[in-house]
Length: 218
Ligand code: DX5
Ligand code: ZN
Image 1 (tube, helix red, strand yellow):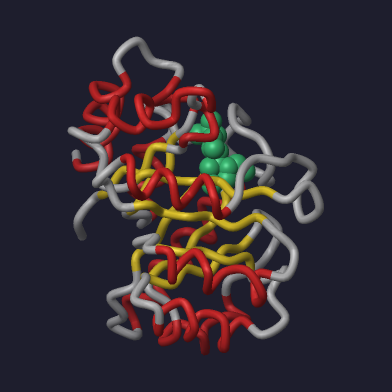
Image 2: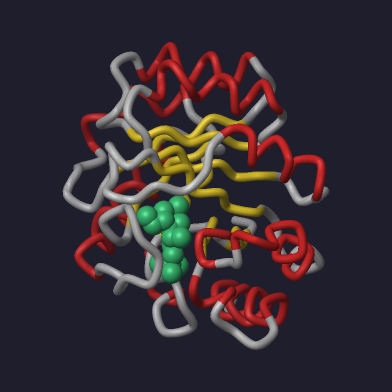
């Protein structure tokens, strides 16, 4: 199981996104881009035009996390623009199978996200439609929240389901990932870690990525 770290630019300086991307690019596997629409979550961030500009500004692949209503309508455009990965929230999608397939058809990895209170078992039959399962370890909307330990059993359950189907689906967690919490999430079976404030709140963001990786691998 290869460990990957995806720093979230939600916690970066939005006036200098290209520089902020460059600050982590030597160490990061992905750049996590939180798209929020002010409806699905009570916060508003950025959309497709900024993603298109970021794609030109960095060679680190973009991991776009869409916290928006009606992802069926909007998600394929992010894939078409060139995002390496596009994740939609199960709760927001009216036709998740079609949308995951559309994302893949445009050449991106397709991700499905579940909030802390949403069980994973109802989505077992969709495993073959996704490249990544994202389990939120905070309620989505804001950076800097506390990691929810109550998600740990679900991470274990998801790992079991993915392994039993021999699926090469990545298991991502997002929210409250830090040097304090990453080990127990890795032990439970997560392999892709989003980290916002733990990376961009550090003096040296690239070094913070490496410290997280070392702890997750150990
Ligand atoms: C929260 C976002 C996260 C956020 C994580 O809704 O999806 O990606 O940036 O920030 P931290 O790591 O500070 O919890
Ligand atoms: Zn996110």
